[in-house]
Length: 138
Image 1 (tube, one colour):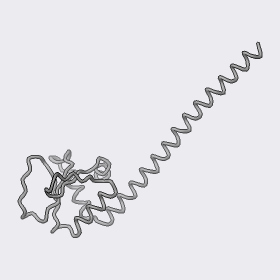
Image 2 (cartoon, one colour; image 1 turned 180 degrees about the vertical axis):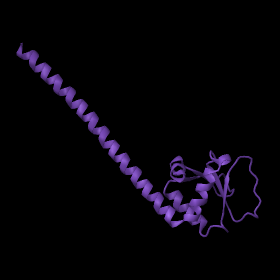
Image 3 (spheres, rainbow, N blue to C red; image 1 turned 45 degrees about the horizontal axis):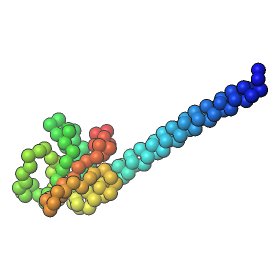
Image 4 (cartoon, rainbow, N blue to C red; image 1 turned 30 degrees about the vertical axis):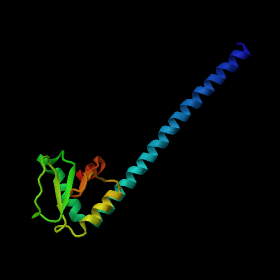
């Protein structure tokens, strides 16, 4: 066999092995990072659940109800006596039922489990992230 041809084959073989090795190493590294991130997020959720079990349990029950399972938005209201009209299905959480409700909502928001979607100067309105919904439904 021609030595030049042999060197080209060896070079190309090494190049292919290097490319595939790099590709698989990157994939495995990303997979490990994602696994670590999921563990970290689950740990954060468990900390929040421990800190405010009544609120988390109410949210969990709300999301498991058959007629509201696809609902993702909620309002904060001082009490059930405050009238509120909405055309779409939403959840309500009341300050007189949950001590420090606004502060607890801020904690959940800073953990990126809910998003503030308040429009103008209306009542505080939020949306659950799908990640949070999945953690609540477990």
